[in-house]
Image (cartoon, rainbow, N blue to C red):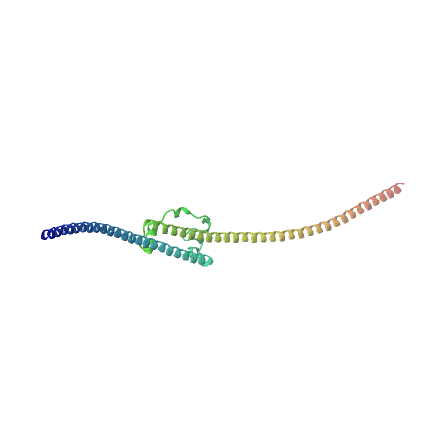
Length: 249
């Protein structure tokens, strides 16, 4: 009986040992799976964090672009309002009046040499000073964002230059109109002067015609008198001849 109990106890201990070993292996296996899951969770968290940071960067870029666009649009609106007032437009474009020269632009070019077209070649690329100004205003910019803002500024510069050219065109048109008006005024004065001269000449011609008519009348009268004298002389000669014939008889 005691031997059987010992056998059962030994068997139970063996089974318990095997079960413990199986549990230990299972725990190690599960622990490995947990480690794998934890690693995957960390990867997912890192990916989510990276996506959030990337999204934040993209939002910052978009917001910076929106702010820049709004600022430039405000500048263009202000520029347009200034250009609508002639005196302010001239001052904004650097146009001034020089004694002995007339109107000149900000580069000192006189009105007669102004161009009616816009030189677009100056907008092909931005210079270093412009890039430095952009960086100071917007902070650190990547190449893509900087290129976008640079294109915006280039477009604004182009629109501004077009406005200035339009102002110059208006000034040139006004100058040409004033010149044409002056020519028309001079032409009208010349026409009036010629009209007065023609009227004076007509009056002189009328006087000459009247004088000619008077002279012709006098000449006719003198001619008639001469003819009368000739006839009278002829009659007197005839009577003298007759008297002479009678005396000779």
